[in-house]
Length: 92
Image (cartoon, rainbow, N blue to C red; front, top):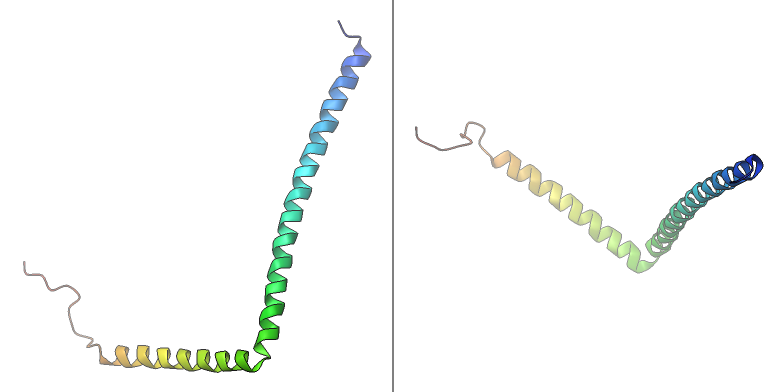
């Protein structure tokens, strides 16, 4: 069949091929993750630029006002809920 040296070379090539394939998978995963991170950074930069414009500041003020309104509504509704009301109204 194969001489002992040829079998060893074939096994070495398989191991190297497997190691290279694993390294390629790792590098492709790293590339994918870095691309996602780059896109997030670009979006954050665009948001920061938008927030410095007049339109961005108006949106921010409206957003903060809406948040204050929502908190006020939650507090007012919570204050009007009676504490001794039963959760379930079922007759046994």
